Amino acid sequence: MFKSIKTRLTVTICGILFCMFAVQMAANFLFAERYYTFQKMKMVQKVYNEIQEATASTQESIINILEEKENDNNLEFILADENLEFLYTNKNLMPKDKKPDNRNSQKYTDIDLKKYTNDFCKDAKPILDRTGSDYDKIRLFGIVQQNETIYHLVIRVSVKSISDDMTSTNFFLLYISIFALMAGVIIVYIIAKQIAKPIEDINQVAIHVSNLDFSVRAPVNNLKDELGSLAANINIMTDKLENNILTLKKTNEQLEKDNEYMNKLDEMRKEFIANISHELKTPLSILTGYAEMLNNDVPGIDRNFYYETILDETHKMDILIKRLLNLASLENKIIDIQMEEINLAELAEHVIQKNHILFKDKGIIWEFHTLPCGMVKGDPVYLEEAINNYISNAIHHTPRGNKIIVKVEPEGDRATLSVYNEGTAISEEHIDKIWNNFYRIDKARKRTEDHNLGMGLHIVKTIMSAHHGECGVRNKERGIEFWLSL
Image (cartoon, rainbow, N blue to C red; front, side, top):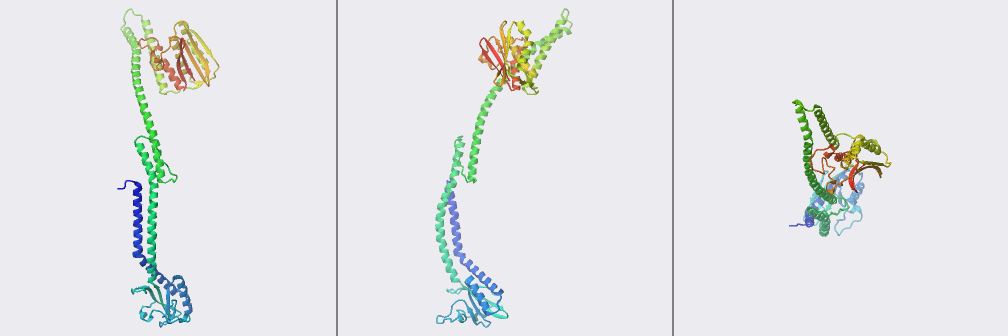
C-alpha cells in the first residue's frame, strides 16, 4: 500500500504514538483516580504508624506532632480522649452559628465519634468511606497510647478533592497530548524524510551499479551512524566492484593475449621438436650407420675415419644437449649465477682473441674500441658465452673481406657492449623473432654449423634476463648491430 519507506516510517511511528496516547489517556481516565486514592491511603497509614512510634508525654506534645504532620501531608486530624471527648481538630468544621475562641475550644466537628466506637483499634487501617455525596473520605480510626494515657485519633482526607484534581489533570493532559501528537506527526515526517534520504541515495547507487555504471557515489553523513556506515561501505563496495571489473576486463584481455601466446608457444614447441629431431636425426643416422659397418667388419673401410666421425658427431650432440640443458636451467632459475665484479672491456677483448683464428680464416677485418666505463656485476662464464654468441653470429653473417666492430662504452650509469657487422639488414618482420629459440630467418632445414641452430641469440637474451640487463638489435647503414647493457 505504502511503497515509500518515508511514508511507511511516518505512518508506523505516528500509529505507535497514537496508540501510546490512547493507552495513556485510557489509563488516566480509568485508573488514575484509583491509584491516587490508593497512594493517599498508604500515606494515611504511614502517618498513623509514625504517630504511634512518636514519643509524647503530654496532650500538648501529641497536638504538636499532629500539627507537624498536617503541614507535611495536608491531612485532617481529630483527637479525642479515652471517653471520645474532643480534644483537638485541625479543621474548622463546627456549625456556622458557633465560633471557636481558642484552639482548645475546637471541639466541634461533623463526625459523631461515638458511632464509631467499635472501629477504633491500635492496628487501624485506612478505609474508603463512600456515601455518594461530596463528603466521601478516606478515614482511619486509631488508638494512640502515651504514658498509659489512651487517645482516640481520627485521620481523614477528602476523596472529592482527589477526584476534582484528577479530572482537571486528565483534561489538561488530553489537550497537551493532542497538541504533542500533532507536533509529533510533523517531526516524525521530517525525521523520516531525513532517514529515508540516504537510503534513497544508496538505492540510486545500487541501480547504477546493477547497470555497470560506477560513476555515482552515495553521500556519507558525519554522524557515523549505521546509515552513514552503510553508505560508506556501499561506496567501498562500488569502488571494489569497479576495480574488480576493470581487473577482470584486463585479465580477460591478458588471457586472450596469453592464449595467443600459448598458441604461438605451441607452434614454437612443435617447431623446436622438429628442429631437435632434425638436428639429431643426421648425427644419429651417421653414428648408427658407421657403428653397424664397424660392427659388421666391412672390408676396405677406413676405420680411423669412422672412429673420428663418430667422435665428432658425438661431440656435437653433447654440445647441443648441454646447451639445451644449460638454457633450460637458466630459464627456470634452477641454477644460481655467480655475481662478481667484471671489467666488461677486458672480457670482450678476451673473447675476440679466442675467435682470432675465425676472423683470419674468413678474411674478416675486425676492430675493437673501448672507453672507460668501470666495473659491472655479473657471472663471467655466462657473460663470456653471451659475448661469444654475438661475435660468432657476426662472423657467420659477415661476408668474406667485410668488417666487424666491437665497442665497449658507458651509457649513463650502465656499460654497453655492441657488435657491428657489415652485411644484410634484418627485416622488421623478423627483428623481434630472432630472439626465439631455434628461430631461423632461413627456414630451409639444412644442417650446417652449430650456430645455425638458432639458439645463440635466445641464450644471450636468457643470460641478460638473469642479470637483469638489456639486449637488442638495430639495423645500421651497410650492416646490423647487436648490443647488451649492464
